[in-house]
Length: 235
Image (tube, rainbow, N blue to C red):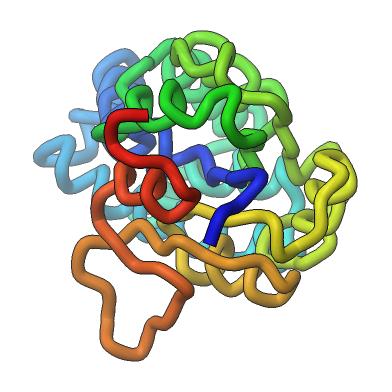
């Protein structure tokens, strides 16, 4: 089937969030002397990621605010060790982290090649739950901005993925119907299930998905999007 537009998640779909955020977090860890309390950065990283993932899930579900997420993901790992951290200190840690993160430019494999080949042939939109100021900075510094026609961020729309309204808003912005669009993302809950609820076909970017996870297309290779939207590898 040929599509007229492709919607992309940003973090860990086009932009290598896992690597970039880890590097930024390690800088914060070292800058603020967290080795006073942890045996290794990996020990801190495990604690941070455990809390951060749950907070992001709650944020996507509309259960907590942006400020709560940003504050608590730095407070909770330290509180776990009995280290009390006030709100302003936690938010300063988060500001440092986000500033460093936004300067990172590592992309997912084939992201640049894919967007270059799609540009001018289909409309390209980024649909993301990421914070507005940070996501715009990431996109501008990534080198992918010239290929992106629309940037749809949950803070601007007022709802997060997987709520179907953010996908409907993106459809309206692109002046397209759901059947004309393919959504590409790495998160099954927010990207794939959200797009399905909006009637949009899905490309689940996952090399080894669990058997119970279904999508219109499943692949671990971004370049497979080209064939799906009707382009050959040479186009």
